[in-house]
Image (cartoon, rainbow, N blue to C red; front, side, top):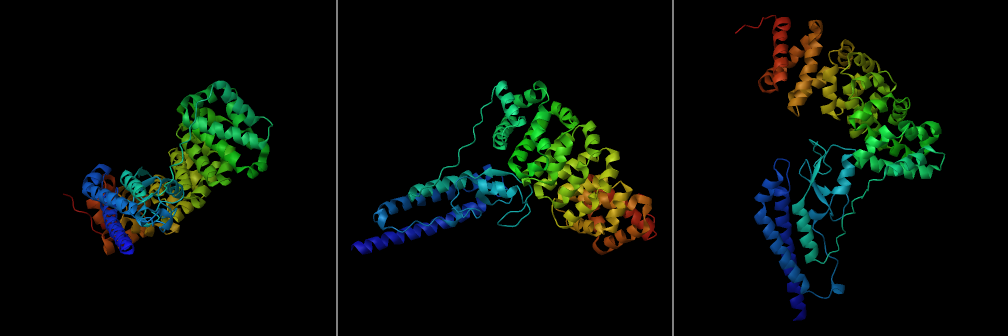
Length: 465
């Protein structure tokens, strides 16, 4: 009798688990914060399913409590919907990304530093942000209670308390003095935290501490190549400089310091992945000021930025592209970035499908430069633009791609380019489609291209309305 009761209990538990799996799949598929639905709407749409899941969990808890002593029970199996595919463990802080998939916060945050695709669906993400998945978190909590499963707590948030000004001076002294590298690294780490969190520290550091920028960077300048052996110190100092550059009034002071641009240039080339990204981000921040555009444009940082566009990960390329875009607002810098190899580096990345949004915007900006157009032409980039235009991933990408094609054709109404464009139109109707459904600017450019095709390729003047 005891055995049959135990079997019945186990059967009930299995039935409840299957029901729970079914309800969980429904919630995660239809209401887990999918990419096309807002969180409020998603919650409303699955409220009945959630109530049902909680009911099943309560039943399962009662069934589990009636089972044999815990020592006689096999380890409970965690539902696969509760497992993060990156960590392969039960989720502690489940978050939703742009694809609608849910992952463990710590692991997906690290993934998104290097990738812009969903790990599970392989979908290209519209953005790299995430939101907390409160629905799944609550379901995991309920399940853990029902199954007496020990779920670890989220790691505590780092608490940073604002230091007194004298303490900031003491940190700077430890960094710039001839102390041990270990002490310099520890002090730089704390200063990095302080400048990230507190605006007052950023203001005080630059305005009130004599020679603060030079003293901050002195370990990087005095150690020379030896800094390569201390990547953490380099990363902390570069990131602190970025934090300081966020403040508008600090940008000019920082960029005009003779150590800043050369040391940022060096950091673009070496150090940790985060060091390279943050060096590019600092230059991007500094290049928001017109006078700084010239300072950076006249330095070796231009070549290092373009190398990073070609070689860097998604985030590093994004920051480097942002900086070069800012620089190219100044006409003189367009020639410099083209000479430094921008066109080859940027088109290579676009052909590979990486950072397409940012790089097309940059190439559209620089496509008024004759050498830029000539290099794109030699690289056969116009055919890649056609592929993008046939199925643009966004209105902005379609706009930037057609702007580049327009500028390539506009230069002396080049007959050979116009013939290639005419063939594309005849075969796919690419520009006719764009003229009907693109952005306002894209429509205007597409219509201009169609007029040139009629005039210079087919020999027919467009009729006036």
